[in-house]
Image (cartoon, rainbow, N blue to C red; front, side, top):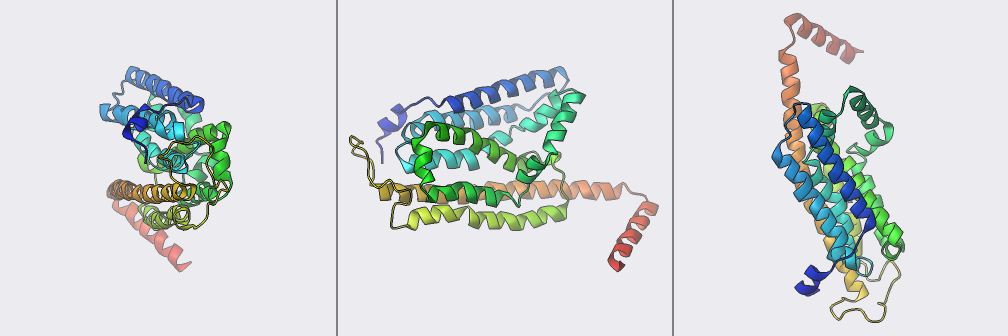
Length: 295
């Protein structure tokens, strides 16, 4: 493992990550100003979640040790991408950027945003049935020579620095922005099943990286002049598998907690809607339900 001095002293510039981070910081700040002008006071803890827990760690991953050594070390690159995909979106999502945009935009802008969120690509990615497949496909490529291509090509690495957090955020939005994705309690219960499927599916690439007796991406030797603390290529792959396995499994715990919170809110909302119905409306609803069952 690297000395602590190396970890803290390592730095690089990731133009793609810096551009995304700067754009996100500016847009969120503009949203805060416009929301305040509209009479909406955004909670300070959500602002801190977005900037301090979300954007700052994202830039540290992209421009710190993991970014500087990710082109060489599999485990450093895996640490960067897996945290950007699994963890950073949840932390950024706690800032509720979508809810802030809806509070800050005018009616026309809010309508455009709602159309985008209702579009087929976003609805597909925001579906809990798709999340296990997306993660499995992305990290399944780490079991192929593409893993080496990602690390060796600055363009591919930069593209992942942008795509991983954005796709991860879209996948996380139904959990962190539950008010904008109203789902029935029955549907959320069904989603719990897919969360446990995701818990197993996300671990598959990490398990294969950890247990494979050969280097899967084909890069079986280091270039001359690597530091003495570099592990062997096979051990590097095993460490990458350990990290991917651990992060993919650990992140499912807060996801399950957020789903319980979401289920509780949905259940209270449905109970409140039933309480507001008159006796005649309840009778009509019961009769319609009986007709559907008999049909």
